Image (cartoon, rainbow, N blue to C red; front, side, top):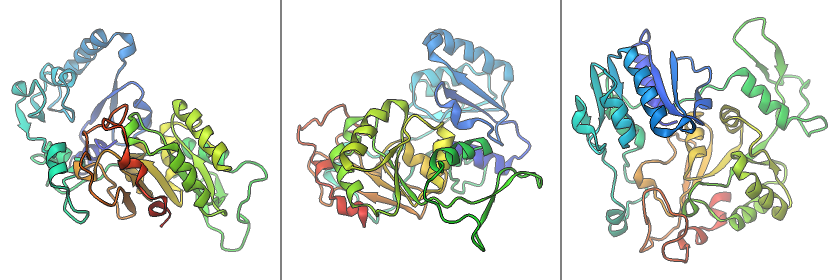
Length: 354
C-alpha cells in the first residue's frame, strides 16, 4: 500500500508512461481498476513458489522495461529485478542481490537497540517509509514527498452501503432539506442517491504479530467508553472474525464486518468513519492511503521506524514512558520476549478516547 506512493509520483511526472506492478497473490485486490496501472503481475506462490517465481520473471523479461524498481529487500524480488532485463534496475543496498542492480540506495531504518538506548521524542522528525520509497525514484522525479492512494470503485462503495445501511437502520433523514448527495460514477447520467449519513467508528483489532496487537481486553474496554450514538464496526480479514466476535460479545456492542468486505471495500468504509482505531498494521496504511482519520496503537514497535500515520488527521498512541525492552524488534513477535507485554497493557484506554 505504501508503494502506491511511487505509482502516484511516477504518473504525475510521466502521465503517458506504462506503469506495471508486481504483487503477491492476496494483495492484488487492492489494485483492481487502478487508474494509473497498465498491468498487474501477480506472484501466486500456491502454484509452487520457485516455479511461479521463474514463470513471472519470464513474463517480466518480455515486457522490456526501461526501469525496474524494487521496493523490497528480499532475495526473491532481488532475483526478479536482476533477471528482469530492464535497462535500469533500482533497489536497496540491503537486498542480498543489490550488487547486480544498476542503481542501489541505502535503506536507512533505525536499529531497535539504538532506539531502546536513545528513544526518539514524539516531536522529532522521522523518516517515513514513503520517504525511503521515494528515494528509489528521486532521480526520475523532483524528489517531492508523494503520498499513497487507493481507488475503491463504485461497486466497492455500494458494498459498504449495503452492509452499513440495512433496512431499519438509524439514519439521518435522507430527504431532509439541504441533505448532501453522493453520485456513483463520473457519468452525468449515473445514479444519484441521497447520502445515507451513518455515523460510525471502525476498529481493526488484529495483527499478524502478537506483540503488535493491543490485547482484546483493551479493545473491549475502549468500546464500552465510545459514544453511544456512534456505531462500532469491527473490521479485518476472514481470519480475524473470531477475535472480532469475541470483542463485540464481551463489550456488549459492535457489528462484525471482518471477512465481509474486500480490501478496497474496507478502504471505502474507513474513509467514511468518524475514527478508525488500528494497530501498527495494514489497516493503518489503508487509512493513510484514503486520508481517513486514524488512531494507531503502537505496542512493541515504535513510530520512529517510519510506519506511522501520514496525514494530519492521524494520531499515535503508545506507552507514555520509555520501556527498557521497547522496541524489541522491527516486525514484532508471536509472544512477548520478556513475558510481561507491558508495552501494550500499560497503554491507558483514555489515551484513545481523548
